Image (cartoon, one colour):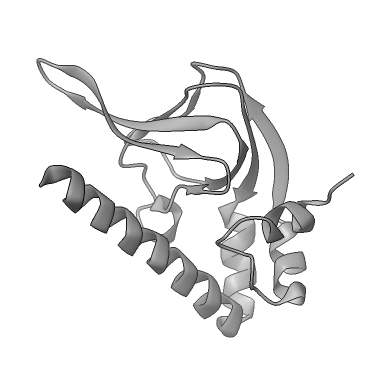
Length: 146
């Protein structure tokens, strides 16, 4: 049976992170699953977690008046969902919905922020990794808009 740390090492975000740091962060994670169609989170609600997708796919959506929900992006296994926990006031910017059965590791970000404040090098490491995710997603969004 795989541990949370084992599952984290399989994801690109954590693949080359020092083992002691992975184990420290893993203490804030637990396994969850969502049925097809189930909502992971809603826009404008408090962002208290982020997810590491292990199986399945989700869609990020936003509501457009006169059009209804519009898909922004689809994310699959190995990707992280949620960066809104990084920046006050910690609110979601989109809705997230499972497109299939989803298995994920959910990380309690109150727990994470406490660990990051205790260890600034760990905080820098994780923030740098999330910054790369943000950069990739912004680049992908720009390409779709062109």
